[in-house]
Image (tube, rainbow, N blue to C red):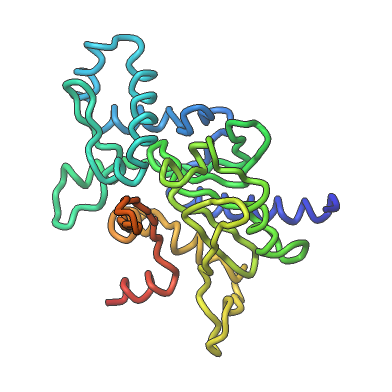
Length: 288
């Protein structure tokens, strides 16, 4: 790729970040990302202190100066076992303390819950290096320090969405990498070009299966309609990743499907599929 092409891709990335940061997201620093834990520790601690200071102080009596370190390691360990989605939706327990990692929008008006919802920290970080140190991911999105999504970007001037898909398949090994490994941290991975978006919830090398996350054209064909005001894919960051929208998706629309199979010898095995709604499914449900 030429320097000119790289500049176009970088510009695309910067424009996405600029839109997010003018709409309730905060830009982070890749050096503050903990590669070993696959977390952004500062935000976990900030959120818990802001919303559950009594529980934090209870833990601090036990752990003292090591509280933040112990808490983040505990979050990572539990998410490695049960997945990030589970703890974004359920309490995290630690010897005598109980924490909520995030707060979803209350169904009914509740001032206390609303304050905790408003305290959620959505952060976007550019050029995140993985634990191996060999891979840099264009964008990683975090909710209260927990990675919820990764994005690989391509501009259709230079490469297309298939190049981003191939990057995930062949240059982003998930094994042993908590950020990328199924269920452990990021819930969805988006391959994004200026024209199209594809997604997957499970990176499995060459076998990775990507689904389109496009709006569909007005004539019924695949892809996205022309956008006179910007990129054809801008709905991803302008609508889907909008603060209330992404929190609502995590709260209500992502589903972990668990199936148990039995072979001819009676041996049982379990398979899990993380289902992230496609664009038209979200659109239909939200219009009901």
